[in-house]
Structures are given as structure tokens and as C-alpha cells.
Length: 429
Figure: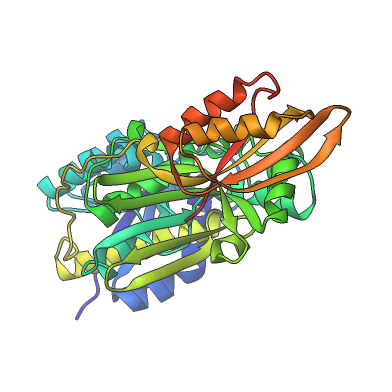
């Protein structure tokens, strides 16, 4: 069969876009052989076409006018790597309406407007491919869409943000503060100049929303996901966690419970025996538990130009196959159902608590009464450090409802002997 040449346009030429261009130069023949389709990257949208770039490109490929790509009827595939919400949403919507397949690595957009854009795709008999939006080069979207379609997914647990995982790893390995670890992450390019989306957990929550929408077949309002960042993690908490056999990780958890869907992102004490505990530096790992397959794990580099570019080009290959077969892709996403999202206050967890107290008789009895009043059972209590007349106390609870623990904690911090602002973290599983 005679091969057709498919024209591809790309919106953006930043870190990921540069990785896509570099990987295309290296592996385009391999992609063509595996898809049996010839293609050509004919236009790239950039802010400044005269800017020097890391990848050598012909001048005529670069444009500062998005319409050179979106409105060109000869371009069949559009890769969006500009990031953010606008103008990416507008560009993707227009590209779909003009009959183009779209590939994106834009987690912010797919988490907040994915259903809207997928509806546009359905209406125009096209599709959006977004493997690169979660987990960098780790294949997770395609398995959730295809490989696990016969399973009822019960739970997703993962480390899905490389920046925070690098910071927490260095705090453990090098016994340094959060601020020192963040500074190193910036120097190595693992953290942005403004890392707030990573540090505060928002990036991980977007990825959790995308995975959960596929795994549980539902629409998710980002405002209903509980999100807590790692800014409150200290060297002391890292040390105590290690002493009791745990490490602290920023973990994203989605689980289907009888009452509804629970989604949350927060720093979590993970048992040193759990596979997630050994996931270090910028690496990511995602566990998916299904009723038939059991538990499967996806592991790899969760960010970076080339890992993400690998996922983007895997999606491009899928789009090329669709064009060759003259099909949407054999699996266009269906409209999702509404499932109640549970408040964090209704969930059960074990808790780690560290606080300072006056070192005097009666303090432990008062603590026991405060927790006992709310039926909070303590699994362990550690008191080691004393500075003058102040003691540092660490305790871990048995499983308890979040609401009950918070009521007990209010009573604890109101005691005259207890100093304010204790450290509080949940334990996994």
C-alpha cells in the first residue's frame, strides 16, 4: 500500500517541545516503520522565531501565528506543548473543530477542562491523546484506557511529582532542610523558579484527577480534591519517621469506597517495606489495584524533556495509525458519570503527631483523656528529646476517622502544657 505523508504541527517549543523535536530527529524513521505512515513536522508555533534553539530547525518551520497551524487544512495532527489553560484550550478546541487529531501533555488543562475538550473531539469525530500529561514517560493513560478496561479499579496510589520526591529524598539522604533541598532541586532544573504548584501539591492533584477520571469513569471537580503540600515537612519529622520504620512521601490516593470516591494528595508516612518507599529523586511510581488483575505498578522518570517527549510521540504514533485506518482510534472516551466525592473528614487514617509540651507530671494523663474522649486509640508514644523544661512527644494512632482525630487534636492543643502548631501527617494503608 502506498504510504501517505501526514503533516504535523506543534504549538510550543519549550522544554517538552524541544524534547519532541530532538526525539523526532533521532527516531522519526523508527516511528514511520512502526506506523507504516510517513509524516513531516511542517510548522512549530513559537513566540520569537529568531531565538537561538537547542535543536537545529529550518527557519520556514517556525511561526508566531497559531493560525498557520490551526487553520491549515493540510495539517492533520497538532501537538500542544505550550502548557497552561489559555490559549491552549482555545487552540485545541479550534484544532479539533477543524478536523485535526490533538496530542497534549497539558495536565492542568486536561484536569480542569478535559471533559469539555473530549466532547468537542467526539462531536468532530476526532480524539485527544494525552499520555504525557501524567507520569512523564511512564505509560499510564493508555493502560487505564485500554489494558484495564475489564477491571473495576478499586484504588490508585502513587508518587506523581518528581520535584517534591527529589526534595524529600534529599532531606532523608543528606539530612538537610526543606529549603536546602529545594535550592538543590532548582539548581538541577527539577524545580521551577516558582515551584508552588509542585510544593503545594496542585500538580499531583491534577494528575490524580486525570487518572481517576479514567479509572473510575467519572467527572471530577478539582475543588473537591483534598490537597496538602510538603512545606510543613521538617528534618525532625523525617528523622522520627525513619526511627519508626517509615519515610515521608507526597502521595496521591484515589479509592472507590462504598459511600463514594475519595481523592486526596498529602505528605504520607510510607512503610519502609512498601515499594513506594524506595522510589527516589525525580522518579515516579503508580500502583493501580483492580478487582481482576490485582495490583500493578508503573515506575519510571516522571518528568523531563525526553521522557515526556517519548509519551507525546507515542500518542502521535497512535494518531498516525488512526489516520492510516481512517478511524477515530477504536476507543473514543465515553461521557463520564457523576459519582459523589467524599470529604476528607469522612475518611479513616492512622496519624503521626509531633508536638512540644511542658515536661511536668500529668501531661500524659491529660493527653490520654483528650484522645480517649474522641475514641482515638494510640499505637505508640515516643518521648526522647528534652530541652530545659520542654519535651518533644511523638505519637502514632490506630485507624481513626479524620473528624474524630481533629476534634481530639483541638482538645490536645488547647491544653496549657501543649505548645501550638504540632506536626501532623497521615500514614499509608
